[in-house]
Every structure is written in C-alpha cells, then in structure tokens.
Image 1 (cartoon, rainbow, N blue to C red):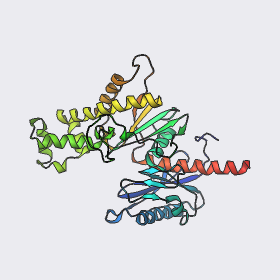
Image 2: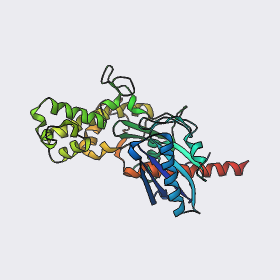
Image 3: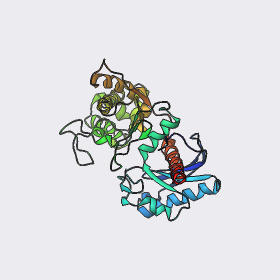
Image 4: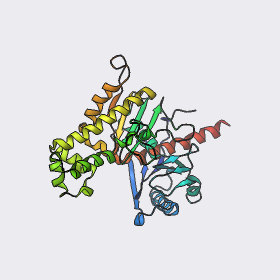
Length: 337
C-alpha cells in the first residue's frame, strides 16, 4: 500500500458538513483552497435529503469552475463514520442514522465520493500542510461544544475496526461526575470543552459571586448570553476570573492528554476547535497539567502540545486531500491487477 502522503497533482473538492451549513472548496495538491462555495441549512433543517441536496448543490457549483481538473469529492462529517467510509452511523447534530451517504451522493455526482469523520480530515490537513508537518505520530483534539479527536500513526489515520476511533471526549475522567449527553457520567468533554467553560461561567454568575462581576456586567446579568468566546475575550482583557476558568479547562485538557500519551505515544498533540482560540490562556495550563500527570514523567520524551494552524479550513482541506489519495490508490490497484 502506497504512503498516503504521495499524492497526484489533481484538484479535489472538500466538503465540511456542520449543523447549520455545508462549506466546500476546490483544493490543490499544496492544500490551497482555490475556489469556495457555501450553503446555509434552511430553517436549521437537518433532514438527510435536505443536507444531501445542499452537498450536491455545492459540488455542482465547484465542479463548474474546474470541470476538467477535479478528481474526487471528500466529505468530512461530524459523527460516527463506518469503516467502509460510506455510511454515517450516527451524527449528533444531523438527522443521520446509518445514512448511506456515499451511495446517495454517488447517484447524483459524477465523481468518486469518499466520506470520513471531520476530525480525521482535520488531522490529515494539519499533518500534510499545517502544525503537524514532519511528524509521523500525531493526535488531534478538537475543543468545541464537546471534544472530538483523531490519531495518526506512522503516517496513517487510525479509524479503528468499526471506523469510530478518536471519540476521546467520552473517556471517563471523573467517575460519577457530570452527566454527559452520551448517557454516561464524568466524560472528559464535560470538563475540558466549550460547554464546560460556559457551564462554569454561568454557575458563577447565577450564584451572584463577586468574582464574576465582570462577566455579569458583560451580559447584564443574563446568563444565557454567556458564551465561550465571550469568556475568552474577558480573559484577554484582564478579567482574572475568566482567565481562571480557562486555566481550569486547560488543566483538565492536560489530564486527558496525559492518558492519550500513554495510549498512543505521539510526537505531538494538535489542539484545534473554537476553544483553542484562547491560545496560551488555555495551552499554558494544559502543558503544565500534562507534565504533572504524565506517567514516567522526567524519564521519557514528552509530546509537544501545539495549536492547530489551519483554522476552519482544516476539515475541507483534509477531506479533499484524503479523497485525492483514495482515487490514486484505486488507480494503482487497478494497474497492478
């Protein structure tokens, strides 16, 4: 099997599917997005056919720009993608349950279609073109509403036996802790995610804590207006309580990363997602906590903890690049028969 980093120069389309939008781009072999298209989900409808229509619409628009050069379409979906890279088993923000997405799109798009988890796609993009270049063993952790993740070992994405590897957010770090949407208690994402940051900030404001005076003033006492970006902004502007809340998220992040280091022994962790925009307010405490909780600390090499560098483009860039590789792999296999 050829190494995944040896890719042909053809263009590919990458699609990033979220709960409220479908974003796409034509991506060249250097990871540059040379054309873009986007559709917002009408009335927040997430029915399979609605999202499928949006994907087809975006792909059609992008193909018309480069009709002779696009070799494949890669889809990055937030959810469990089966090992066949064709079926979305479960998507928490979309109405997809065992959805045969690749086959549905293949009937409407005259190009090879490949589906992958969005975190796998983002990690691949960072490995090829971003913060992870030059490193063969990487783990990516994406901090948003929850926690997503992906692992790359010896230059290959690790999807697991059933395609659902990388759901790090549901590792249990606190038995009997906060209830998680997955049904269990004490999941990592209940302590080191955007939801956790907002929950703790709202709790302080609701309790009338004098420590939360700045946050309270920023939202005029209405806790529903407290968001992760708002807490980050307050911390950057010098609010010590907001900085403390981010540091606590960072400490929990370091706890989980130490466990992942024991499992995967990567050369680097790539931290992405919206919460990572806090930069060293988050990553500084995470690095300290990681060193504190790492097994064999002081006697083993330590993985670097790095911020992702490709931002919101990582998912579509990685999806396109993986699709380009898959097309080349199929060509090589046909030629060898």
